[in-house]
Length: 444
Image (tube, rainbow, N blue to C red; front, side):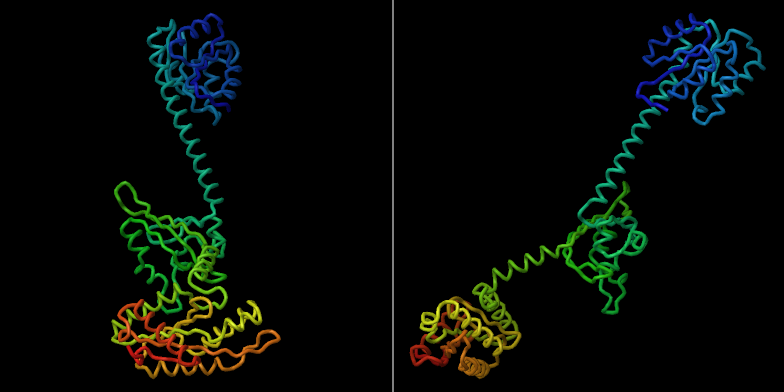
């Protein structure tokens, strides 16, 4: 059936002059008036259009008004159209009752009184306008619903709808893919299974009830943004960033939440790579000057808290320039990498070795008891560097000069400590190389 935003009236009368007169009378209402001269044509017309009201003449040759109304109301497609009978004949009770039984909602006696006609018809036109407006709103809502579903289905982020207990009520295809399962297996299950590791023997639901997500969103009705590890049920944990926002009704009561997340594995790898570039030496893989200073400051802070000592060792390779000039830069790079590997074997995991540039290295010894600890490390370094380094076809030995300073005895801040270790290293170099000196032993 065709629909149109303009309301329509159907007039059924076998006399052309009556149809013309009715058309003229109805014109002030602004409706679209359709006119037919028989019941058979009326039945055909209502299948092609949706009418707000039918003005139906009772007395017609062939199919009269009663038969026409009965047939209209026996069809599901047309049974709700209001029918007003227009008649100039019998008005006794039985006649009127027959009209109502056949589906009429009202009678209009002939001759027509324009004011009565317009008043009765106007009510049905207003009802039809409201119905059309509601139909338009319903269509718009359906379109918005389809569009939103399409957007959710095509979204690059995982989107999960939750009820106020945290059970999944909606999940889009991206979320299913990222979490490693199908929609039907996730619906009505709890979101906590993807958020919390249960290897610590604490149930995921208990961790959920203690979490910021539950407290801030499902209890307080707020929002939360975090980076965390989410669990793919097939492949394990992956790094993710999520936003969760509570759904709150007009009475400020939490009805559920929307959980939106994305896999940030590539971004995390990029960040890690940028971090390495920013804080690690590209040749040796050791910490660079930036990370060295950060670690030194942290170690000094720990020393203050726990009344311990931090030792800094400055190393400068002996005769490195001669080897680099003789064999070339590639051999020089090989030598620096070999030295770095040997230095790493000389310290604990809690300590740090850095390449400061060129052939200069530094060591931070965290939490040392006394100078004997540093002396042991220095002797170990001198020992491991005595062995020749294989540089392609050549084999070369290289020594190092080491300066050692302690915090807090030899410097009250990072700059002071670095300066002290550097000064001790130059004394070791000037006094014969391949040896170490403590700053505290220097004559000042």
